[in-house]
Image 1: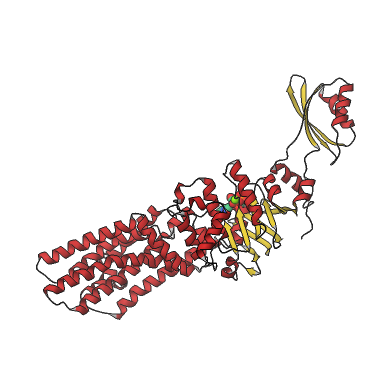
Image 2 (image 1 turned 180 degrees about the horizontal axis):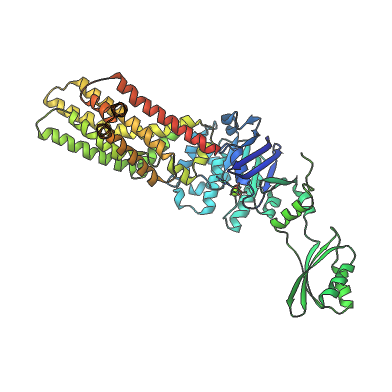
Length: 319
Length: 233
Ligand SMILES: Nc1ncnc2c1ncn2[C@@H]1O[C@H](COP(=O)(O)OP(=O)(O)O)[C@@H](O)[C@H]1O
Ligand SMILES: [Mg+2]
């Protein structure tokens, strides 16, 4: 449904997007995961024809966005990072304008009513957009993208700036949209992508660093074998004990945190549980274990892991 | 195209700009018209000759937002990702401003009819004047929309258009100041004032029609090019 090949966008000397390729199959919800400045918005702006790529091609439903922009755009609903709303219009007037702009074929009144029901904005239909809360504005933006029932939905960080309740609502909404549309959703939040998407493309500094199903990716990146431990006792000796634990892969001291108490970063072999042995060994030597917590992988950690462990180790083999 | 045109038109009247434009236009044209009556004249062309300067001041008002505001509110992302050709988008914008201008100009028809009660005018001259004012307006609006596409700040667009209008107004003065005949001749060739005055004086010169039409077409084309270029930058 969407085919992206060697897409590159250069601003001056900066490669905002650097030769990325991926495909999205019909009916799939693809997560486009990356930190700020990774090139997510740039990619989406190219896919929707808002800006042109420096090189490479993008095809939507078989139509090249550069060679056949009008046809390609007919198949896309786009919610940009900032919803493109005319603040001085009412929701209804705005949606009617979008309907005409997109030359939608469905009977207007019923179609718009249906969309308002689906994104739950029926009750604010006659309000001026300027007076709506951020959550409602986001939904009006989403409603706009749904007009004309496009096969492809491209949503750029649709939950940014919303409160937790709104985030859950929007996520659920997007999940139901996945039944009727092919969706690309960008995010810089790993759990969000995990919650919503079938497949994940991870992008960093304009390059794709992983392309895999959500399960594989989160399994490979699961964090239940990395810990931070606080242990009272001489640093050198404790380090030696820690290294002696079976299945221990790496031990690093973070230095003295309290008087005589050191903090260590522990990494076990994936899948191994080191907690019991850790406790017993330290107890034998009477070095009290004062704290143990598993580290939460931030996106930055993931990128470090993905980029330092050799390139594209997690690639699911789609290329 | 129609969708853009319709939204743009209604936008002129949800914001005060449409009203301000019409009010200022009616005020000055009304003043010129009262003058005509005060001198017991039935010569409508005095209204039209006065309008030239007024237009230079108020056309920027009409066009300052048309492209700049879309960029600022990021609604250009909606327009440019919709299945609509850039040319149609620009024409929609242009036509909306032009139609507001036509509504303003329609008042001169009323004036002519009032004068016709006193003395039958030379209708061909009246029609020629209105035609000339339409052409002048089209050219100026196209220039204004073009300048609006260069920035996302409507104030800068307004000031920029205003500066260009000032230049257009003073072309003739420049021409008379420059001693090199070759250059001053070129300047006179692009003089909006001289060409417009021909219409006011009842002279219908095809070259003048072509001149204003070309300006309108060329600047609308430039606006399309600017939108295209932004995409590639
Ligand atoms: N118009 C532009 N001019 C110059 N650099 C840009 C422009 N747009 C984006 N960039 C740069 O390209 C990179 C990718 O930006 P973006 O696609 O917005 O990232 P993301 O959406 O993933 O946060 C950033 O480093 C940004 O500074
Ligand atoms: Mg972004």
